[in-house]
Length: 89
Image: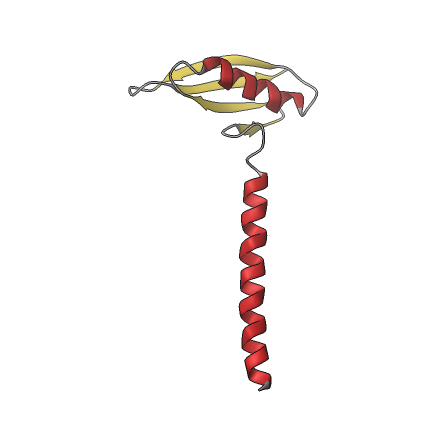
């Protein structure tokens, strides 16, 4: 009988761990979803016609550090859209 609770407890721990990891990863996708970078700058993907949204995401990212974002590079993709490189100044 005691072994049943030990196995059930292990399964419960695995479920709790999976839920916690999922919640943490979901928390990373905030208002700056798609942005990769740090306080110095980064990159953000954009869809065709979505440059303004990408720049808004870059600005929001830099605002976390009390800075403003400035585009330094744009790379277009053959299928439309692309990636914007930015610096936080």
